[in-house]
Length: 222
Image (cartoon, rainbow, N blue to C red; front, side, top):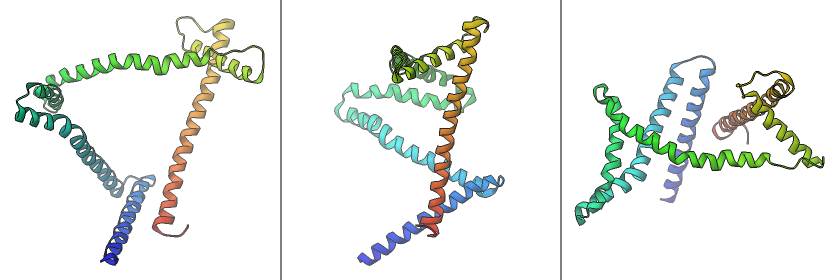
């Protein structure tokens, strides 16, 4: 019995690796041209992702937060359990955007979500993004030690980059003209570094797929 279980496990692993390898090759076939294999892999990915997301949402959100409270409310007669019907109805109203004649109803939950998200997220953005960035630029620059020189470069980069995006005054003269030009240099260096980091990450993904195809699937490398 144990040998049968082990054999079945090995077979399922091989089948899974083979399917993954074929889907990987189907996706990379787009580098040659758009073809039916790429479209099939794309549709499988979208369909599997949608099905998995639906299952996760039902098991982790709908069932514990909607169905269970309603069941308790029906059994116990507790009216407070039926409060979950309010967000449930708002969520269902979003689906009315699929019906042109009823799409106006979808504006109610969407406006609520946007308004609540903007109000709740404004303070979080200020506390997590704006204030820490301001604090990070308030650094000592004197005396000119090695660490303080780095601080000075950061301060100059921040100020000059802000000057570049200040369009109320024409970029001329020593402050706005020179500052905006220096700001462009800092911005280009930043964009280049971010782009290089992104490319390195994508190349790493490509290398991992290559190791998977040549190692786990074809066993040409270890």
